[in-house]
Amino acid sequence: MASIVCEEDLSDEFDVFGIELENSDCIDKLKELCVTYRLDASDIATEWVAFSQSKKIQSLCAGSLEMFERERLSKKTPKTPKTSTSKNSSVIYDLNTIDQGVDDDEAVALYESYSTLTPKAKTTGGQKRQLTPENVPLKRFTGSSRSPVIPFSPASFSPAGQNTPSQKYASRTNAGDVVCSFGGSDNAVWTGQGQGCSIHSYDSSADLPERFKYMFQKLTDKAFVLNDLIEDMSSELKQTHNIVDLAHVALPTQEPVCVVGRICCDSNGKLNSKSVLLEGSRETSAGKTIPLDLSQLPSYSLFPGQIVAVEGVNSTGNMFVASKIFENVCVPPPATSVKTENVPLSLVVAAGPFTTSDTLTYDPLADFLKYIHRDKPDLCILLGPFVDIKNEEIEKCSLTCSYTDLFQSRLQQIVSITERINCHLVVVPSQRDIHHDSVYPQPPFNMPNLQAKNVQFVSDPCTLVINNTVFSITSTDILFHLGAEEVSFPPGSADRLGRLTNHLLMQHSYYPLYPPSEEVCVDFDHFEQAGRIPVKPHVLIVPSDLRYFIKDIKGCCCVNPGRLAKGQVGGTYCRLVITPSGSQSPNIAAQVIRV
Image 1 (cartoon, rainbow, N blue to C red):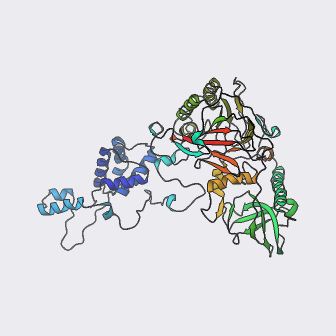
Image 2 (image 1 turned 135 degrees about the horizontal axis):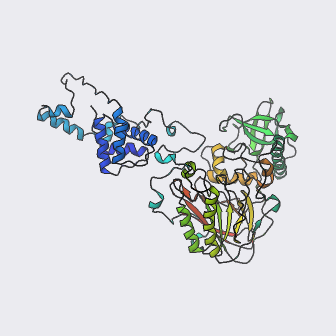
Image 3 (image 1 turned 90 degrees about the vertical axis):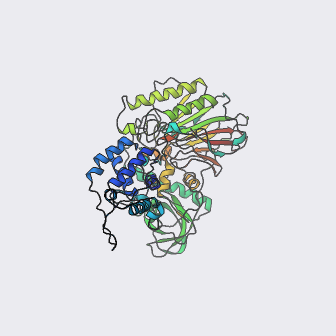
């Protein structure tokens, strides 16, 4: 006999899939279905999730439950009730037998047994099994994968791939909350001074044109670029750590030697401590690779593509046993000095997507523009995607205009507001912009018909000098890609987000990962110049799907402003006030705010 399911059991089981049961009519209907079709709370929850996903039903209501019963449950054979094996009981009790002559005492005892059922009585000790209708264990409970784990729920199927809360953007209650602060933010004046901004590239020779041919690279040219990266880093490591000579990575030796090379993985899987290879340069090692034994190291943090100097012994020629990994050299500070006049620069930074994943109404962008109009910052830096390839409406091809027209209409809206308040605008493209070139490094947007003097289109990545303050900017989510491939020891040590950001400064590269993520098409002909970080910036902007942060790393203010829209809810943006101090580094106050 199927037990009458209580409301608490149903709430617990549906909560596993991110579904909140708030409507009493729906709860009563679910109880009725459990009794009719002899299902427990776990069964009805998994059956509903399977049905709702196959039919793409967004909400649980009376109408959808009737469809659920008609199209799924009614087609299933009800579970056969188990016959009691007790010597004193040969009757199968159900609602029909109670009405057909069971005496009052037995009926009362039977009804009381329903009220005594609790979640504790239902469980059999230990954690509940959480299975799909086909009894396939969820990935959440079967181990780690290469990408961050997302709990299985209807919201987890959103195109943006975010762990989205159940509330929608319009019903949010935390707009304007400050979630992260840096420097003297309590006394900072966030309103702009109405001053002009001087914006130019740090190295004009590294600028990308608006149009260029890409992905015509030869394998030999690519190999030369990868080898040059090792050679350049080798010379800096030798000079910094006073390394007299570099040895061949694969030649046997009984004495400790120093070698320099690129970290590689011996397979197509994720890098781990047993799969690390070291690839030497052509000049010192003829491009040979050798397995790297990390068992003697007290700590390390490695990823594919990282260039390192290692000290150790290669006694057999088949394995290099590392005893020390030298710390990489940080990029040098900029040659320019910050202006001495005490005129602060107020700016805001926001990264796309600028609309929620289920619409193209751009409500988060509209709310962000309200803030700009209110506080009138001197500078606004916007990073794509502006027309996100992962948006649900884009994937369904439901647009009635072209992608370029959609982008231009939204940009014109931004330009009209910023131009009115004398706010300069810097626009950075993204790999996820469906209307733009999907290549890295990425050329700037080309809009010859836009008549606006306050807008500057730049490439991804780029290094800018704004009022003598150096900014390094990239919209590509390198932190997320590094985090998926990095191996570190001891596990969970130090600040992970700070460590990932530090890799960029230490490797002198906006994208040091090699091979790159499948989402990124790297053109190495242009990467050698445009993909390097030339100097240590005063501000490094690296938006990511990882948690927002503002950190001081090696004297550089590193900012992840988060995304303005995260799935179907609002995200965050960052505001900064930079006050020149007359020294090499300015005073920076910053906050990350919910839109």
